[in-house]
Amino acid sequence: MSLAALIFDVDGTLAETEEAHREAFNDTFAEAGLGWHWSRADYTRLLRTTGGKERMARHREEIGASGPTDAEIAALHKRKTARYGEILAAGGLALRPGVADLIETARASGLRLAVATTTNRPNVDALCAACWGRPAGEVFEVIAAGDEVAAKKPAPDVFLLALERLGLPASACLAFEDSRNGLASALAASLACVVTPSLYTARERFEGAALTLPSLEGLTPDALPQVPAAAQ
Ligand code: XBP
Ligand code: MG
Image: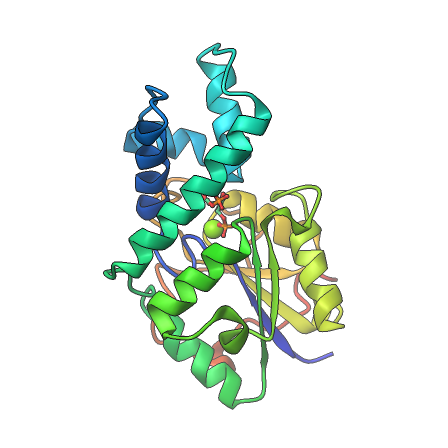
């Protein structure tokens, strides 16, 4: 089956969002009087755990703290998500080079557009509002996000949910990712995957990627890797 849809990861792929996430986490920790603060070096290591709630739980284990409880972490994550939305609404976030053009030329050429992300839906809406001035549902036909799946990346679940909602086989789609966890998730869903490493994932390894590029700048739909490279 020829290429029918592009499935984009969000954080690090559409835009360099992780500094805004880190700021939202740290502001939330300060507001809660938790005494936690994640440096860039902390966050680079903690980002290997996908999902904000899971990341906070991992930090709690790493420092041997008894709290906050999982329920308190869930409440902290809600506050962090609200803070992240405020940070993005304040402006300053730009799409990575080539993202807007590829999405528009892909749409114009009849390709369907989807998102498969670990972050939650409000954060996808916040990014689309900040970068396209539109809600996510007006930019992407299908959105598979965060807690809609039981297992986050590198498990294939969120890409499989996007494929299910598209009603397409993996062999008709191409994934775009920035991280090793994201690449592993796409490959586990039998998707070919283009990787554009981000600031936080630049040192990771991307064996199995159909293409690894510094950015999507200048990439046009006719230059995309032929699928089903990974499905064979
Ligand atoms: C990256 C993630 C997310 C974000 C933080 O998601 O792992 O956890 O770091 O967002 P993506 P949340 O799959 O888009 O690269 O706090 O909402 O998890
Ligand atoms: Mg990512």
